[in-house]
Length: 379
Image 1: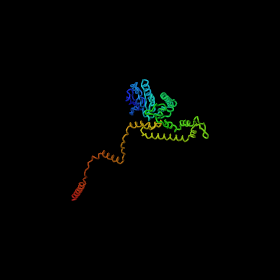
Image 2: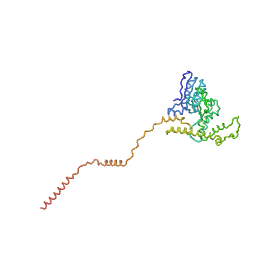
Image 3: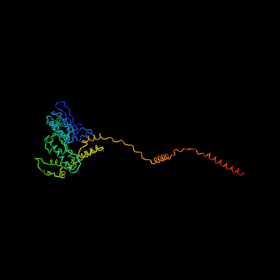
Image 4: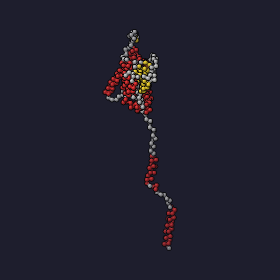
């Protein structure tokens, strides 16, 4: 089952519309998705099908949570090869462009987003068990993979590599305006984004880390606010500029604000955990999915699709069985007695009347006969 679909463009015979709507994964992982009946495919198959439209303009609509980094790079390479062979590519963020899906999005010379589309970048992650050396090697591998991702982001956006890395560190969610500001997108599909005074980027992991006593990010923000502007004196009477070096300094200078941010972060984390617990029905696959989400910072919305799929394919519970009858000592005794009687043969004995009356008459007759003999003998 494919996660993409090619269709002729209704307005231009030399153009084709491509929709990418499924999880992006490697070929060796496809069997899991096929078992659940979830759309999926590999970049190699995608490259072969894309080659049929050589020289054409391709509008690539993307609505994906992402998936494998390697598969995402494969899609990026296939679209870049299409450009090199004379075709053109426009990528369009439909509803969500997240994780590895952002790599395919970067292949567009024009990169558009709908006003409601969400764009998200984060550091690569992996599941691993093993020895300490295995963990260290995996960490080094993830750093290398991040560098490879940054190569694509830097090439496409033209932005500073350190700034792009910081966005990945923060697991940053962006609306259309923020994606344009950071260079990931080039325009909004249906007009210009509305300007507001609210922050365009939301980094959930930053607040989660703060709740775990990681004050690095908040210290940077506070330090920027504490730095005087060039036109301002470096020190005001009665209110000297504080040099924030540790948590205690931060609490003294901005105690109320720090407490508010910390409370909000803790509340958000509790809400996230509660929402994940509500999805857990106790079955093994769902339970493991929820535990993984808790450990990696994912939300209930992030795993809703996988939980629903697992529940839909779970075997029906076995029908309850009638309880076995409990032993009855009295009944067992009677049954045994009946069986013993039957085995003894008593049932084959025939009954009959006792001749009580005939025996009495015979005894009287015998007594009379004895008397008669005596009488006769005495004569």
